[in-house]
Amino acid sequence: MNETHRAPDQGRLRTGPRRADISSTASCVFCAIAAEQAPATVVRRWDTVIAIRPRHPVTSGHVLVIPHTHVADVGVDPTVSAHTMACAAELAAELAACNVITSRGSAATQSVFHLHVHVVPRAGGDGLPLPWTPQQAAQQAVASPAGARS
Image (cartoon, rainbow, N blue to C red; front, side, top):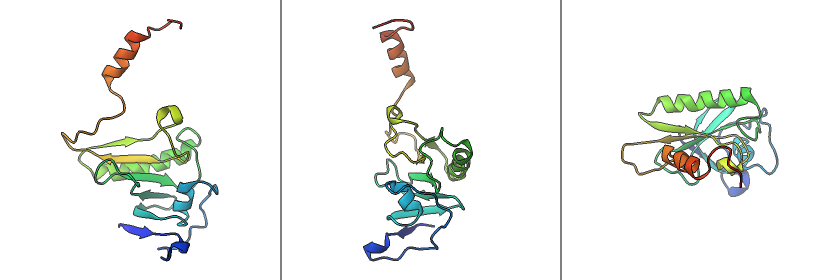
């Protein structure tokens, strides 16, 4: 189910009914997408969660799984987070290999402060590095031993 919806002022009608149960914050792009007031390519819908294609996918098939309810990150509401993750797991189960990733806070690379889970299909040799490696942690431990003060 790949459908594209655009905001009404962009000349294209929204697909599907407007969700009355969507909690939103006026300035949140993901709230606007969930309310079908901003453009997005929808991959799948659940009652309270939507999966869309990101504007800048890192692999073919990369999707964002977003709750309708405005929750800033995975640590704010465990119930919403768990349901969103369950929907992401449904998508992940359809793939041979993938990363399922969410971030909490700027230091963890979160840039949109509405909970979203990335489901990133992977293939051997795809060349896509994760932003961390076990070697990086080991190098940091050597450079800054526990208990050392600067």
